Length: 162
Image 1 (spheres, one colour):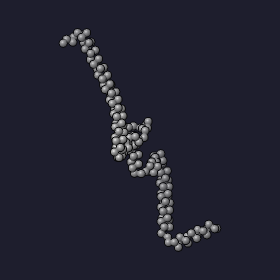
Image 2 (tube, rainbow, N blue to C red):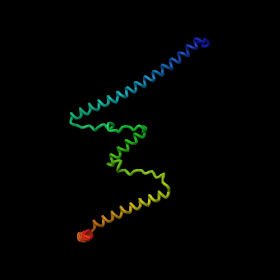
Image 3 (cartoon, rainbow, N blue to C red):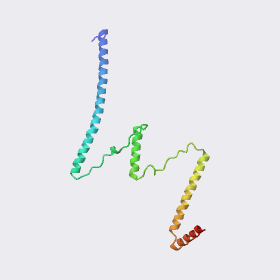
Image 4 (cartoon, one colour):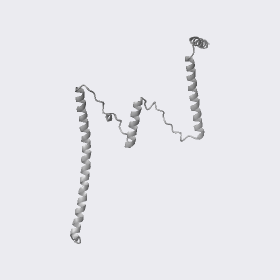
């Protein structure tokens, strides 16, 4: 084959570029059809689950709910990895029986000076000590016998009368 002919060379180049364009089109169509298939697959799976649930209920059995229907929507600023971590964290809290309110919050102390951090630690220590003393007082009240409790309540009544 003689590629020295400019017309034939142009024709070959054009043929190669047409082939490359065709390959791109085929790949794009394949991608679109895969996305359509994936969407159909999810719908097909949904109908299969519903049919299975119905058959199982007719037979007297039960089917656990499909978990993904309980997912929260993905936040706009959230990546897929962050979304999965958040969902797993919430499910783990649910299994443990705690909520976001009962989990100890994170407090950012990076903007505080050393003196402010020391003051905060002292305040926290004082609060811990108050809780400890209140607990000790309650335990001491639980260990009192009825006569001592009656004497204490009489003394409190006298103070209220004053």
